[in-house]
Image (cartoon, rainbow, N blue to C red; front, top):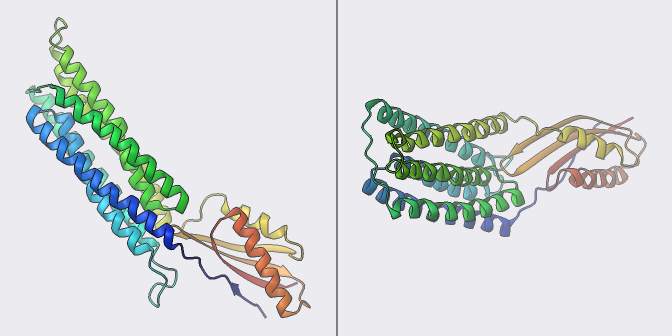
Amino acid sequence: MMLCFNKKPRVFIDGDHEKQHAAKTSVVAAFFLVTMKVIVGMMTGSLGILAEAAHSALDMVAAVVTWFAVRESAKPADREHRYGHGKVENLSALFETVLLLITCGWIGHEAIKRILSGKVDVEVTFWSFAVMGISIVVDISRSRMLHHAAKKYNSQALEADALHFSTDIWSSAVVILGLLCVSLSGFIPNGNWLHYADAVAALVVGLIVIQISWKLGVRTVAALLDAAPEGVEQKVIAAAEKVPGVFNCHHVRVRSSGPQVFVDLHVLVDGSMPLHEAHNLTEIIEKAVEAVCPDADVTVHPEPK
């Protein structure tokens, strides 16, 4: 005979509101950045700025998807979704990865075409540097807020959004460097080659995005395939076996669904133990597992020794 005791998942109403607020403000910030970069990029002809505008435009789409994802993932479990709606966040992160890769393709194509054609006409103005400087300030603010919310509520969707904005910080800095090189080309003898710095900067932006996309994509696919978080199984076994009355912990299964982690484990206990004592023991085991895996939905299967 095997008993099964399951702890009801916790509901974080205030946390859901905070996550949705973080996602919503990211949409507003991304829209503001796209508008600025498109206007200045068209005025100056800077491919670096236009590449950043395209990057921010896809970030805006990703932010909208993230906003939708955190709203959907907050819904409680129902008849069709016994484990809740947390996977919506993982799907959102996968969608953002695809958008980032599309951005890389466009940036690389345009930059290489401009370099090979030799037609480089970039007008560097005060607004060229101003828009990128403002972009960095906004990106720093948004990435910090999103990262804080993602870490606090274990949200992969918000973490992906934070990666988007943090990537923009470095790519914006690269574009500024490219614009500086173009400005210096007129003061350096035989410095015409510096005109290509803007296009080269755009390529560097693309490489940065590829790196982030790869890391994000690997983690997202792993979550969608129910890969166990690294090292969690060993921590769960160690925590459970420290509980007095537990002789062995085995058959541990760990899976994540968005911000929620589900832990399923079997323990060997005294077979003569009364039912109410077995139930109390599982409560203690759950608390021990939560100490190493906070806010997990834990299911304990006691087996007689």
